[in-house]
Amino acid sequence: MDKENKKLRTEAKKDWNQRVRALVDFVKRKDKRVQAWKTEQDIRLKEKEAVLAKKVAEDKARRQEERRQIWESSKNGHSGAHDDKELKVILLITLSTLFKLNCCNNRENKSIKRNGMLRKN
Image (cartoon, rainbow, N blue to C red; front, side):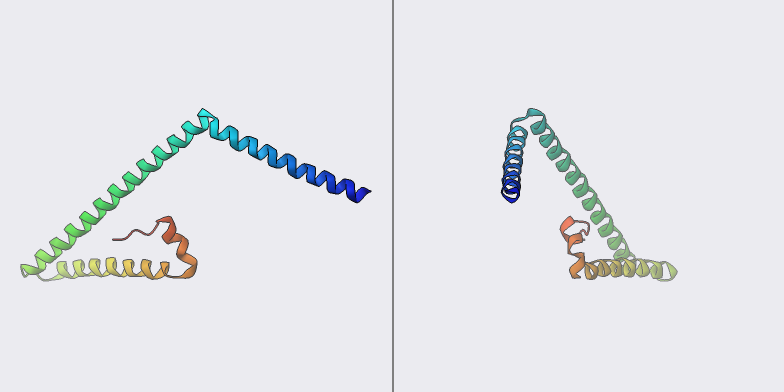
């Protein structure tokens, strides 16, 4: 008899919890404050994405300008220590990019790709 009562109580608890969850879901869908919060979060997310896209575009333009300047200086025939520094900078940029790409090819780092922390150049 105790087993039957226990079984009935657990079934009643499960049913009660399911009804409470359904009620909470219904109220959340209909509540104006929750709807306003969701729209506010969507707006904030879009703003963050826009700022991030702008920053990425600026960084890409800056890198392209640096590469163009290095190319122009090497084209004009300048040589010396200044060119060695520029070549080192290019080498470091290239190696760091390759390192980031190789790190994210590993199975445990797939979340980095998914989260967008690695930006394509």
